[in-house]
Image (cartoon, rainbow, N blue to C red; front, side):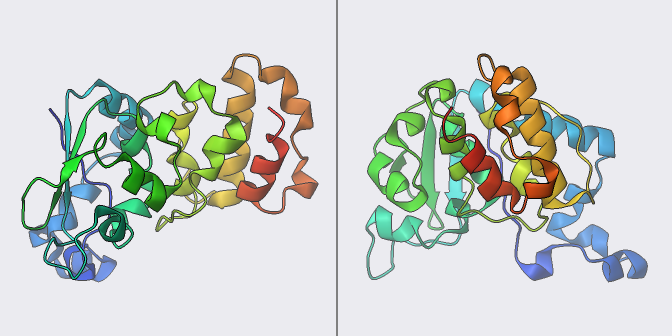
Length: 223
């Protein structure tokens, strides 16, 4: 059984550059995130989807929703939670075989199977994907769209968080920006995806690559 958290904590919990200068960062909850080497970080991000997929069960603690709210309807609560809008949590909805949710009170809210419709309403992820369907059954463009309403603190992470969606691996180049990250992702999808490599000629050229997400989605819509 595994539990992972892939959203940022409160501002005061995260370590700033000034904290490192002052020597006060080690006492913050977010300090463990920056102790990894670049090699460990690359291995972790490229392996993340597989870890979720191989987990017997995942427990999700939603610290930002409460069953004491005026409406305790899961569909209403999920739309208030950051977990449903952050880029890195996307794969947590489609990779694990079993997921159970708990609000901040710690009481059992339900399983992903039980709450499937509420999750679909909050994320637009198709029910078939939430049930563990083969991702290859969903078009490349369709999988790209799953990230459209999600955000990350670092732009290129929007591309990196999709690696598991296409079973591709690539080095992380922080500082390359979102455009270059999606361009490299596009290349890896075309190179490794069965039956799709021959379609790489349909991808837009660099000169027409205006919005990485939009252009990549359009170019793959026919696949």
